[in-house]
Amino acid sequence: MPIIEPEFMELTAGLDLESFWAENDASTPLSTGLREEFTTRKPRCAVSYSPDDHWLFEFMQVPSTLRYYHDKAYRDELHHEVNAITQQYLGKKFFDEDTWVHGPKRIENLFDCEFTYTEGATPWLTPATNDPDEFVKILDRAEATDIARWALPEEFLREWDARKVAGKSLPQLGTGSRGPATIMTSVLNAETVFYWLYDHPELMQRFRDILARKMIELNQVLRAFSGNTTPGWWITDDNCALFNRKLYREYCFPVLEQVLNAMAPGGARRYQHSDSAMGHLLDDQRALGINSVNYGPEVDVALIRAKMPDAIINGHTPPLLLRNGSPEEIEARVVSDFHKAGATGGLIVTMAGSLAAGTGVGRMRWFMQLVGEHCRYG
Image 1 (cartoon, rainbow, N blue to C red):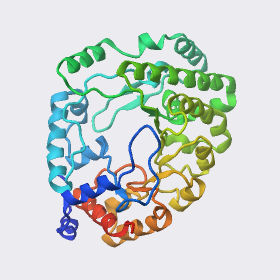
Image 2 (image 1 turned 30 degrees about the vertical axis):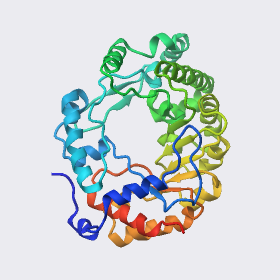
Image 3 (image 1 turned 135 degrees about the vertical axis):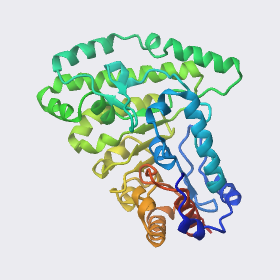
């Protein structure tokens, strides 16, 4: 059975879903390749939810994660079922009901890093090696790879063509990627990364430089293939918190600087998600021109606003607070965050990180109601 908390359903009995989302649309910053609009000329802060597979598995008590990932018909039906529930209780659908079977290559695959699937878990990118000599060979192959010939597998091209012939919408590709810290700590074990940064710095500098070049090549190929001419770039880099400022500046900053300059020039949107304690990197994030952020709950929203005064803050409610907190605790946090970071119009109210698995639709309704009441302009 889906998670529907009776106490919170009672608290939100008067919530008008249609009116809420209509007002939310009027309150949502412009979504184009340019950075989001930073203004108080709107009814209130917008609310945003991005439930993912972790959330779905617990919400629907999915019996087999392996079947979910390997059986398109099952996955699409499950998405249809959960969409019917969220449409009823939240007034919105969140999941694609015609999912893809195949996809382009990922940058991690270039370095022999592939997904491992296990029952009861989400896919995990498995490190390629812990042998520096073997990694030299992996880098040699990566550097020599013709990205245009490698990036688009035949089975993906066939699926793309079939969807195109059927008149289905096709996605714009090359819009974003995991960040360099998280890529590095997927291709190699995190421990290996930090040992090698000190024991094999020239090897890791080569990894950094190849990564930057090939990320740009890959995403230029993806953009050209899909006809994507919209500038802008998103980054998901949870593991950047593992890097101190010196190491981040040496190994991560140069990758992002090159990729962002290529994919999100000028005033384009530069978004970073890192649901981790990476407050020590805010000066570097600002120097990179990051202008839309979603950071972890350990990073105080007032610090984000002070360090990044022109950035849209997507947050900043702790996911576990929404999942486990009392109505009063959740309300106090929504009010506090608005007072700290919402007054100038640069706040989209959502989770500081991801929507926690185990969060039910009653609590999500309460969150919406609180924003409607407490995060208003004029």
